[in-house]
Image 1 (tube, helix red, strand yellow):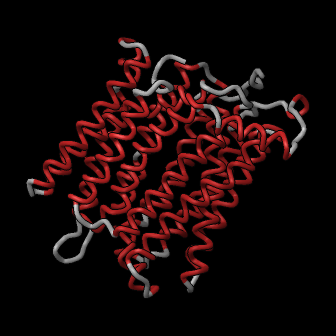
Image 2 (cartoon, one colour):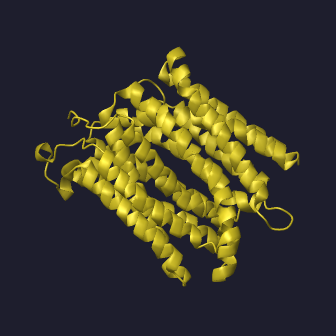
Image 3 (cartoon, rainbow, N blue to C red):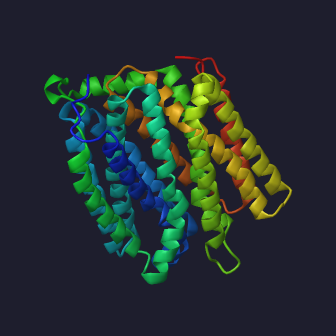
Amino acid sequence: MPPAPQTTPWWRFPLALVLLEVVVYLSQDMYLPALPRVQQGFGVSQAAAQLSIAIWSAGAAVVQLITGPVSDRLGRRSVLLAGVLGFALASLACALMSRYGWFLAARLAQGCAGVWAITVGYAGIHELFEARTAIRIQAWMGSVTVLAPALGPALGAGAMLLAPWQGGFVLLGAGGAALLALLARWMPETVDPSRSRPLSTRSIAANYLALLRNGPMMSLLGVWCLVFTVMVLWVVSGPFMLRAADGGSRGFVWAQLYACGAYIAGTRLVDPMLGLYPRPLLLVRALDLCLWGIAATLAAALLRLPAALVVGCYGVFMVGAGLLLAPLFRAILERAQQDMGLRMAWASSVINCAGALAGALAALFEVSQLRAFGLLALLAMLGARALAHGRRGLAPA
């Protein structure tokens, strides 16, 4: 369906959406340095503290399955704005909870609302722009979004010097409220509700079942999820793997700045590489770079080289991930024919399930050694390579 005419410059909506994405992901990354304090403050174990990361991803994974098709019917704007409002309120609730169970419930609501808004927004991006432009915009947005894991730990550590860790959630709530006003002004509507199909539980379930049975789409989603799993394992376990001798988070903060800089470098390569290579070949080469980066990370950890060298090898993986993920996501969407809201909801839900499982895996094994991380990451990348080179993998759609 053709998008509605835009009344504002084309870049305003992507800019507002990427700012929202940064704020939403800061709700994970700003709070990472506080994990040891959360553990102590609530009197819970390391595994329970890390559960507050996994439950955010679990909430993000579930609600989109409803809000995606709802936005196909009612339009993108109203559904996105409702999600932004919910995120702001849930962030404030996280700051106010005194019992750990209620804190986890607020984190669940925060993940639900924030990621449903982002997913609906990305559906609008892929409806507004043709494939090459959408990939370029998503790569650019990825280079901005990665500022959340890059600067989030530093911002969180700095905020804890001025206020208790709950203050970070107050800031997130204020940011969500500001972006609600901005998106209400700048977001175009890309769906004509009068022409969309009525909501039907049976039809929605049938479409999701068809997506589940879509082998080519699920193979590429598997590649995306396994790469994402490595990234989640790193950020969830990093504060413990790179904890300083005094228990501080300085090592992790600097490692994140470097790793995210490497990811940005990869995203900056997307557009020139698309001009030189067919997209399937580019995706294969980028995935190989990810694999070799993780293999080097594990080798450096097993040889007990200095942590700085291990982190340096991980940066190679992050360059490959930056080059891979935007064009891979477009390829995933192109392997299905359902309404864009359904496709985006399904893909994003599967990815967030992978994130939740990665967080749970880190909590289960209490990953606190670089060697353990390297081994788990290598297994994930070998699985991603097997899917990519399978019969339903990265062959042209």
